Amino acid sequence: IYKYSKYPMLSFLIFFSLNFYAWSFIVLRHAVALGFIIWSYDYIREKKFVKFLLILIIAALFHKSSLTFLLAYPIANQKHVNKKIIPIILLFIIPVILIFGNDIMKIIFTFINAGDYLIYKTRESQMGIMMFLIYHIFLIFASFFIKKDSEKENFNIYLFGVLIVAFSLMLAEFFRIGMFYTIFMVLLIPNIICEIKSRETKQFINLLIILICLGYSYVSFNSIGLIPYISNLF
Image 1 (tube, rainbow, N blue to C red):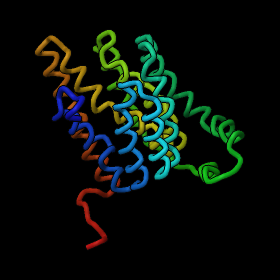
Image 2 (cartoon, rainbow, N blue to C red):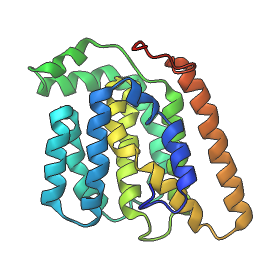
Image 3 (tube, helix red, strand yellow):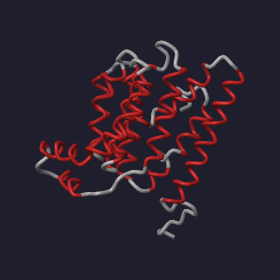
Image 4 (cartoon, helix red, strand yellow):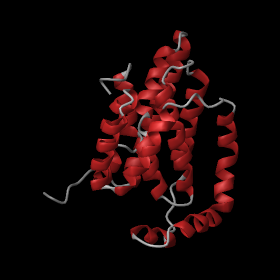
């Protein structure tokens, strides 16, 4: 955050409020793998694929799903997606997944017929729609205010993460995979806000995002039992 964020305070607020911090109390191996993925971001920006790959291999020693972040390397360096596609994603991806979720899962598990991941075939846990909507609100904001060639890597990675998180509406584990990508919103959103020239617009959006983060964190921390936080070790 201190290396890449132009607005560290808001970056930390997003990090602490939107599940990245809270989930580290629950999914420990995943949290360690996520730490290595954050480290690999340096090598995405510097276009050093070998070092990027080595960091991901270390991350995979803690959680195999971190290998899905290999896609971030080519995705980060793509041209910006046409902004018109963002509202289309928002309007159509939710009903498609809700209607055809079971069929999509059947297709996925035609390719997965052995190993630990088979346990997810019979799981019926889904993430709530609130987190997905917040991610989409931030995505629409980013697509509207982002400048050409500014924050390209963060925008592309975050956009792909939102697409992955959409599938958590049919299987919660997709949210955890999406976190490897969506965590870069802690850089994307604050940096875009700092580029807004209108002082009034900047203040309004800043306040709105702070209220969204604080409101969601209160609801979320309560729902997963982190308020009050009690350790079983003591």
